[in-house]
Length: 430
Image (tube, rainbow, N blue to C red; front, side, top):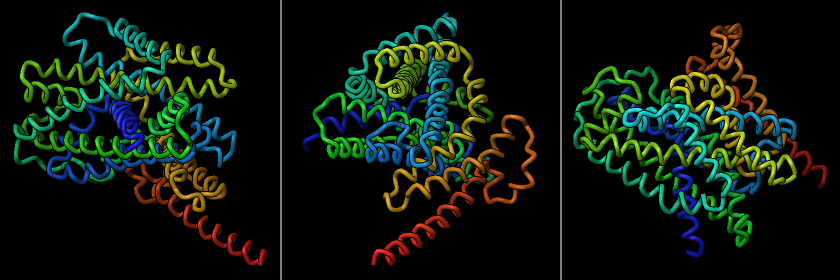
C-alpha cells in the first residue's frame, strides 16, 4: 500500500502516546480486583480507554482541524473555553503524572535522586523533543514503541503461565461500569482529541499528502493502534486476575512491582523501569506538543507563542511532577468527572455522519452533558451534593454516570425534531 509505512509509524506513535501517563499501573490492578469477572471489566475499560479515543482519532481524520473544531458547532466561545480547559488539565495533571510515575517506580528504588531533580531532568528532555517536533513521529514510531510492545508481551505471556488458575470473586458491585470509570483515569479520551490534532498538523508539515490521503492514514493508524491497545490492556487485566488470590491487599503500583519481580526475576525491576519511562515520556511529549500547537493557533501561528507555551508547560510539569502519584490522581478525579463526559460526547458527535449531528444536536446534547455532570463534580470537590435529591433517581447516578441517560434521551428527541424540520423543509421546497 502507498502509505503503509507512514500508517505503521503513526499507529505505533499513537499507541505509545495513549499508553502512557502511568496507564501501565491501571489494567493489572483492575483485573486483580475483578478476579473471575475480569472479562466484563475489560469490556467497560475498553469502551472508555480504547473505543472512545480511537473515535476521537477518526473525528480528527474527518475534520482535519484543531481541538477548537471539535466543539465549534456548540459555539465558538464554548469551543475556546473547552479547549483551554482540556489543555490546562492535560499539562497540569496527566503530563506531570508521567514524571511522578516514572520516578516512583523506575528511579527512586534504584537511584538517590530527589523527585524535583528528576522532574527537572525529565521535562528538560521533553522540552528538547517538543521544540524539535519534526523528529517526534519517526523516533517514537520506529524505536520506542516496538520496544514497549516487546516488554509488555513478555510480561503478559510469562505471567499468564505463572498465575493462579483460579482467580477470586470480583470485588466490584458492577463490573462493567467499574471498568468504564477506571478507563477515565487513563485520560485516553482527552489524549485522543489532543493527539489527533498533533497528527493532523504533523502530516501537514510533511507537505506531501492530500486531505483524502491524510484522512486514510490517520484513520488506519487509529485502527491499528486501537487493536494494539485492546490486546495489551486485555492481557494486563487478565494477568492481574490470575494473581488475584496470590497477594491480597496490594495497591496499583506495589502490585505491578510485585508482578515484575515474580515474572522476570531480578531483572524485572529494570525491565519495568525502562517500560514505564518510555511509555510515560512519549505521552508527555505528545501532550505538550498538542498544547503548544493550540496556543500557537490562538496567536496567528506565531512560532514564538509555540516556544513560550512549550516551555511554560514543561515548567508546570516540573512543579507538579515532583509530587506523588496519589496526590495527582486525587486532584484529577473531580476534573475528570466534569471534563470527561463532555469530551466523550463531543467525540461521539464528531464521529457520527454529518446529517446526525447538526448544530442543534451538538448544542442540546453537549449542554445537557454539562448540566448533568455538575452534581458529580460538585460532590467530588466539596464532599457534599445539595443537588443529590434532584439527580439521584437517574439510572447509573450511583456510579458517577448519571449524565448518560439524559444525554441519550435528549439526543433522540433532537433527532426527531431534526427529521421533522428536514421533512417540512422538503415539503416547502416542493
